Length: 162
Image 1 (cartoon, rainbow, N blue to C red):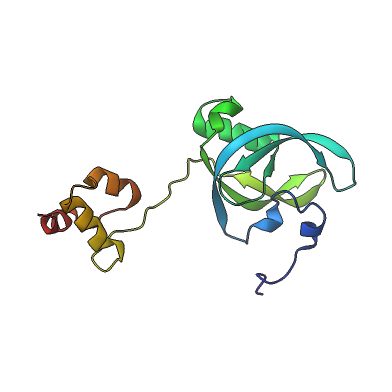
Image 2: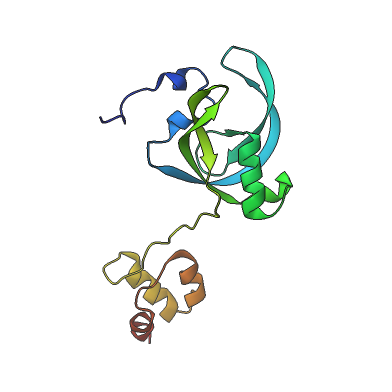
């Protein structure tokens, strides 16, 4: 069943924070932490509770971090200090977990540092000719281009810059 245009009822209860309902089944989000802090969060019963919350650089709702997800971030980045989590990327997915005597949907962080693939710079790619021109004109370096793109045939690419 197509669910993209349907509204999950949980989105109406706490729409200010990322929830398992925010991620499509079998999908994940790779987000960059901008900061982690304690803040008061209104729970589903209207009760205020102080929670650990991560905000992201990407245009995405903040995420309430439970102990499990904090431990995963500590494990993948080797530090328990939230200040050192800034600018680190995490991959978030929804899964079912046993909690409070029930099986519920929850957000989890994958126990690996996400690897984000860069676009491939090929001769049929719009930016290919611009990259060659910038290299020829001395406006950029190969290393600078490789920070943003994978070059499938680097030898051929370099031959075109001469």
